Image 1 (spheres, rainbow, N blue to C red):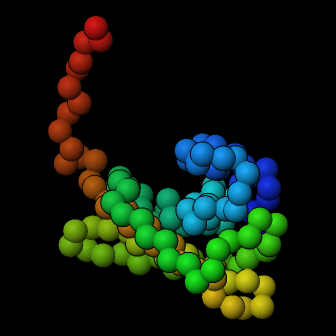
Image 2: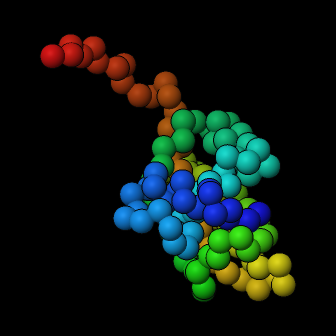
Length: 124
């Protein structure tokens, strides 16, 4: 996977960075979650238990990401039972196998049947 210049510019604009030009933010690998080989296992694991609700995100990098550089991403999914959570840990390595950084996403899994019925709200 590689952060292309266009993808980095678009991500920087969409996430509120002051300038479109610059290095990929630490949160950039979330873009790769749209790839089926990454996003599908996360969605499938979450849906087996319940509705995934974002609870926490952690980014820890040894060095910054570089636009145009290729990375290997290893994804580990772990479930917790009480409360029900899915924890997705993504480790990034350069192509020499050197660790670059880690992103950990915690999703709380809620049974949709346990949620109260939506309220009807009138728009002014």
